[in-house]
Length: 141
Image: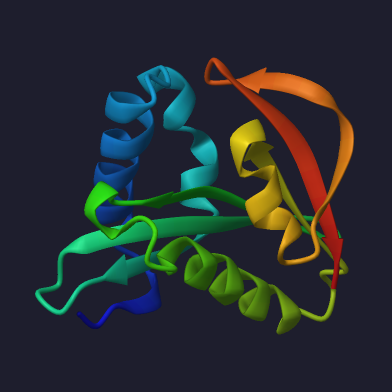
């Protein structure tokens, strides 16, 4: 099956997938999943051949930092490399922005090893986000 990942203005499709993955599957409170950053973020949407949303991620700029967040993959697509493709797409996009020097993300603790494969390193202490333990991670671009 062929998957495409593109920038999108279809925030509703991204939110629908995030609600399934984060709110329904991971029990993140709805009021914590939806925030005002969606209006200013660059959104990426992965779609299958039929046009169904199967993955999403977003980037928010904060000075010289590009924060990758809300990365999720539909359950049937997990384990096939789509999460890695979303991260690679986000990093490639950030590298086109000359003022961005660092990529940052908040990793669920169980996913730290996944992000380390891209060169991200843990900074700071553990914190709870949406009831799930996280660590911030950074990567110099």
